[in-house]
Amino acid sequence: MYRARLASTTICYTPELLHDELLYSWLCRLAILNAWGTGRDAVRKIFGGRTVTPSLTLPSHFDAMNERCARALPHDSFADLMEVSTLLPYHRPFLDHERYAQLMEDSRSGNSLDLKLRLGLVANRFGINTPHRFCPACVAEDIEMNGCHYWHRQHHLPGVICCVRHSLQLQQQSIPKEGLFGQPLMYPGLPSGEECTTPECGFQFRFAQLSADLLLAALPPINNADRSNVYRNRLSAKGFQSSRRSLDYRLVATEVRHYFADFANFQHQSRLLQTARSPLRWIEDLVERPDRSLHPICHLLMIDFLFGSIAEFSLAVDAERSSREATRGSAHTIPRGETKTSLQVPGLEIEHLLRNPSLSCRQIAQQTGKSVGTIVKYRRQRKIEVKERRKFVGAQTRTSIGHDLLSGLELQSIALRNGVSVQTIYRELAYEKDTKLHRQRSLFMAQLTSRRDRWMGVLKTPGVEGISKARSLGFSDYAWLYRHDRSWLLTSNAQYRKSVSKRGTVNWPARDQELCSKVLTRMILLLRAEPPMRISVARLCSGLGQSSQWRRDKLPHFKALLSRFSETPESFRIRRVNFAIDSLVQRESDIKLWKIQRAAGLRIWPADLIAYAQRRINELP
Image 1: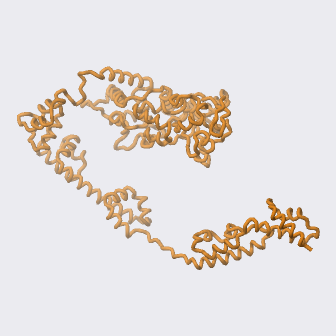
Image 2: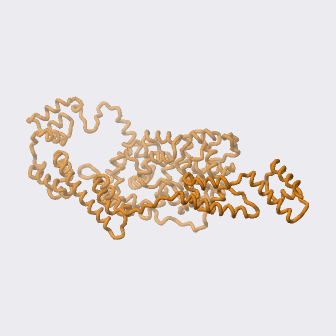
Image 3: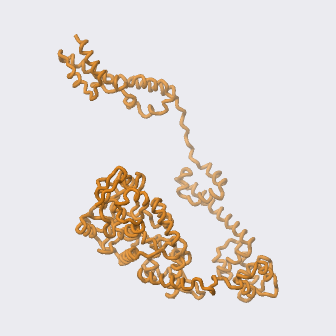
């Protein structure tokens, strides 16, 4: 137990951080055990401000929290506290060292949304708000062993819906009506009493076990290139490498879908499958684009498919890191795509080689360290004749490809019609700049015509009245036309806009006179009320409607009448004393001061009011 000074508040008791407990849960118990509640006042005492909303899994504002309760925190080190009470070890293996350092810096001063943006959780569309989940069996064990229950880290891992310890489905605690904005710290409730169920398939439990193993493994940040090479090597070892020594990602996607049974009953099934045109695109991104921030769920599924466990994945990463460090600094190591000769050939010499007709493209490529395709591209850009070989595209085929490109056909269709690969079509587009510009213009005009027709069809749809309704039905076409063809869009929309009726101007003198008559009637009713009530501006306007509250600067007589009739507290007390004296005179003859005070019912009796009442008593016959 510690006693630490927290601004104007004393921390009387500091609980211990329990096994697998979230820092958010520890803060809830700290606030409750010190009788702070779980509202904004508790947040102010912990962080020094009422606007901070503590995050469930990725806490922030550590510096502010450490400044106010440094001696009360369960760990002195910021790194140790993040390691054992947050989900940072779950995200860390899929961050490079630079991003991890920035994340730790943001955790000290930034808010939780900055952390989620840094991790790419917002862009990945797997959801950023983790629901409050608990296992009924774990709650019973926690109460028996510790005397209280708390939020567990393993229950709040993304995509996990079952408890690894008891193989039971997790229950979700609903947020109160005031929401987390009114109650930023939510203590776990007791189970609802419903019968606990087990997950419908083994995949849910296997994924939960893999996620928990990743959290407990405490892996360091992994170099992006090392992680990509580990995935690539294992995919090649499983036979997914094509004849061109590249990976067949369509085959990989098919096998992954078969392995996980199309992610049946998984809450992120639609996000993982994506579209039919590019199914499981995230698999290719994991290997080919390692710098892109992908959710740990994608990495865990790939690890399960390729390695089966976190331990095997960790061993593969260690082997790849050792291999890279062993070759680092070697004098014979040359970057990929470079040769010793390429580093010594100046630009002018390359230009002379390109214009030398006695050298083939392959010979120039060998001397300069460039690829043959690059040399061919350089020569064609300079209108230098390139000798055709049997393997290359002939002039007739190239002409046919050019006509098809100008016609606006899809690149896959053009490749099939001419018996070439799609890569060849892309190369032709890169060589022929004019053809590329004409194709872009024709495709743009075709898309423009199509979107115009679709938008006009939406405007003419029966039941669609106004542009707002049409935008809700054809929002994509409206956005595209607004960006690329705004003048036509505004002109076309003008005839379909709903006519807005203009309100008449307000006759302020008439309204001023009307309110004055109403306030006079209201004044008479208030003067007749027994016992007397104070005639305030609010009470005068209470029966006049909201119009009496609007634009009093345009109602001069009404405003003056309110100022004239409204009573001050002193004048109201005198009227109340007069009413009490008149009532007592009608009932009895012996009038005393204490009787007047009781009949008046006033809490405050200043000296001048007592003197006034005594003077009235003396004036009585």
